[in-house]
Length: 247
Image 1 (cartoon, rainbow, N blue to C red):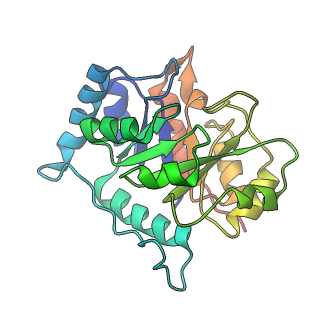
Image 2: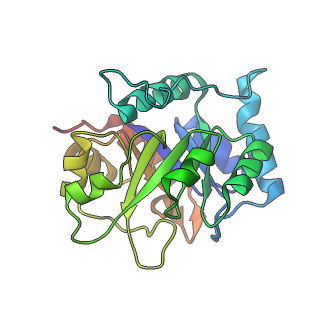
């Protein structure tokens, strides 16, 4: 079943209802954005979500060690490890970062008790390796890029997961615009990733059927007037979880 990440959550009520609706990941923005959480908002959301885990508040991933992936692919092995943790502890909390140093990312992730880190600013492999928590790395897909060009940016051995989103000149975060799903579908035949960009409750089932991504990521597509809409979040999750996978 396709995993679902609801990104840009900023308040406890939305986080709790998103968890009840069956989201696998809740994304908290620490990059510069109108959706950026304050320290207090972050604290309150983490307490509300992780409080339901009882005494177990930290998630431990048994992903592959660098250089020790046998017959399975690196990203496939990590996807399996994250799947298992999400099945047990969902929703996992993902911090979205851009424009910070690796030390700053680690300090915030520790203080916020995040499960995963998402890097959205084009950070290099050395930066990724300095981040302690498993990293979901954003690959920006620009107009005209071939599947091969996209895959060249999906380097195994550092990040735990991949998120493919539409690239835009000067943009660090998501654009809310879809890129070529045919390109995404070719990449999905060889690597698992989260599909982002232009998704909403009306088109996510079609996207899953055409692309067969490991997961889907949405933010503006479940908002009304710039604010998260829990009815749209529920509809998005229902559509994503009930969608047939293509290929």
